[in-house]
Length: 143
Image (cartoon, rainbow, N blue to C red):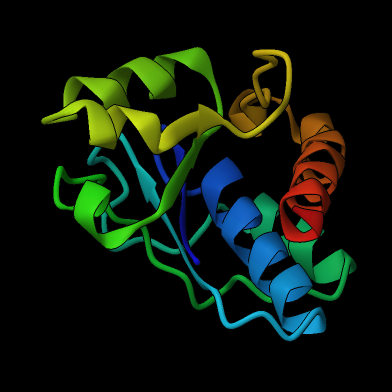
């Protein structure tokens, strides 16, 4: 299984999702390939936001070595499933879809069209966002 997590800048939510899903997949001995990307290009090559690194570390997950990258149409070929954090990310990713099979790979990470809030402007959101992502990743691993 090859899974891509996508948010806006690839420094807050999607690196958390990548780290959490990698951690859970490793615990279950699943040989999954997991990556993350952003729809924007502002943080290409940058590490995750220090607050995402911190909240992940509090839960025993190290995401400090990850680096931001921008989502590309070729990602549709490289991944089986693409999870996005909110409806804006969903629309941005679908704009790059070349065919229906590309579109079929994309879905929101949370159920019921619920977005993962962007914690960028509020330090207090990092822990709740971590928990939302963790629960969603547990669901993915359990299939």
